[in-house]
Image (cartoon, rainbow, N blue to C red; front, top):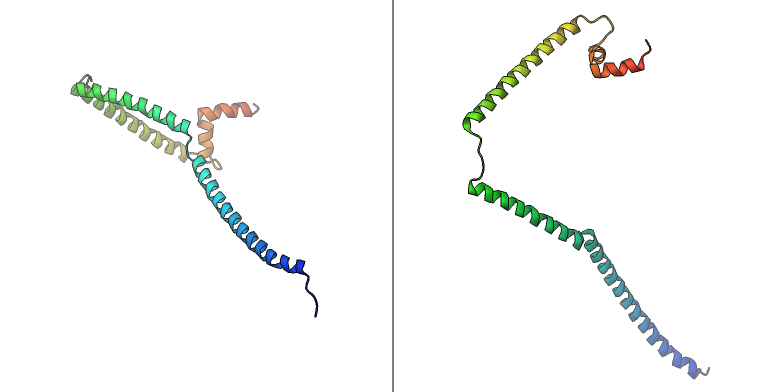
Length: 148
């Protein structure tokens, strides 16, 4: 039989304790890492939102706007508004109807004239080409680009 080294047998139980302690520390490290990930996610969520300065500026801006609106509302409630008389409103509505009628009439005249002009186009020329040649803004650009 072989004689066991007393020093070696004492190390074996200690190595089991060391392994157990290492496993326990590994679990603690993993727990700390998951807690770190949670804290980083919370920090990222906080940074994604508006800063305190932005919130304060928005609150100040909204308070000023509220004051302006309340002042306007007080003016409306007190009757300090000059309403447009019904006669004046009717006159404006009538003028609008007259001008609308004239604009519609001019548009119809233009469409009819354009149809007549396009009926007599020479062979090989399209309506688009004629429009480009007759449009004064585009015509000005054409004069610059062509040699006469």
